[in-house]
Structures are given as C-alpha cells and as structure tokens.
Image (cartoon, rainbow, N blue to C red; front, side, top):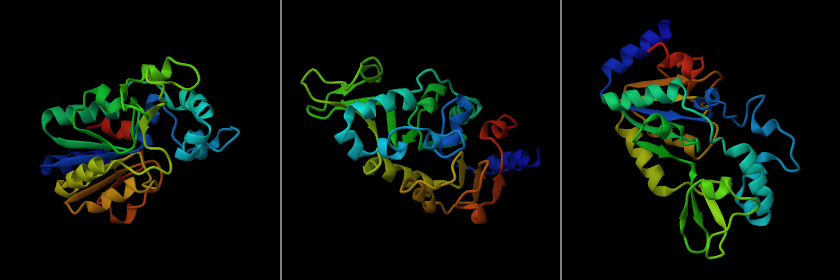
Length: 237
C-alpha cells in the first residue's frame, strides 16, 4: 500500500501527467503480450510471430499474414480494465494530459480516453494500398482470405509492422507531450521495443514512475518502482 500512497502524493504534486503504456496494460483484458511465458512469441506457427508481423511477410505472404492477424491480433471482444478506466477518469478530471500507447487494441478510447497517441497504430483503422480509401475493422474481421477494396487494391491494417517506420507526426506529438510533463508514468512495458521506447528519454520532469511486473530499462533512474500489475496499483488510487 505504501507504493500506491506515494504515487497518490506524486499525482497531487504534479500539474501535467503523461502515461506511457505497453502490452502489460492490456493483458488484464485478456489480450496476450509478445514476450511473456504465454505470449505470442511462444506459440507454434510455421514462421516466428515476429516474422509474420513484418512488412516483408505481409507483402510476400498476405493471406498467411491475415490468418495469423485475425486469429491472434484482433481481440475485438476485449473490454477495458481498471487501468484503462482509471486513466480515462484522470483525463476527465484534468489530472492526466495524454496517454501514449504501444498497443493497437483501442481499449483506451473504449474506456473514454480522448487524447491517445497510438505509436503502433490501431486495428480499427485500415486503408486500401491502392486508392487510400479508409475501412473500419469489419472489413478485415468480417472477410476471409485477403480483404480487397472496391477498386481491387489490398486493404492493409494501419498498424506498424516490423520493418516499417513509426508515423512521424505521432512520435513528434508524443515527444512533445513527454518533454512538457512534470510526471511520467510508464506502465506495462519493459521498454525493450524501439524506437517507441526511446521516446521516454525526452522526459526531464520531476517524477518518473515505473509500474511493471518485471525489470525495465529505466529502473535505475525512476523515482518510484512498483513491481505489480498495473490494474492492481490503479485500483488503490
């Protein structure tokens, strides 16, 4: 309880709070992460999941990509958990300035958060690679094989695949939010995925808080470290 009380005090003392989250934020909603014992990297497929989620694989084996993507990446029945809901409440109260997420599941918005920067895109946005027409998630989840646009082009999810760059406008906004924050809460991530994880280096504010069950890259620099599930921590605040 002591750690939660310290976090409460830091929140009261802060004027501009930013949250930076990873897969651990959504695992409590039933969405698997990539590197845990039960994560996607441990599953048995003809190709390693990291390869199947690469731009090269998408272009060379589009139908196989979509089989994996529909089965393992589209978790459309998942509901926001305590962490998502608490963050949305903090934003509504004026405590939280922004959520920066590495997740693509849309659960922060589903919980009510408005200022969400999705570093790796979203499964809810898709576009035609030929004409650029926008499609919702139903165009992918409700189709079989490779989804095609009415123009004949392939529909591609607006998610950042391995080998693709992050969207510059999103990373620029994320870096600006982190620079302006006097408190940065990093939750549910070991900060192992770059370049997204490198954004936290822009922080020079007062309080750096890490909430993660395992070790994270900035452990030695944090003002507060909580080795717990993020939902458990937030339920105490």
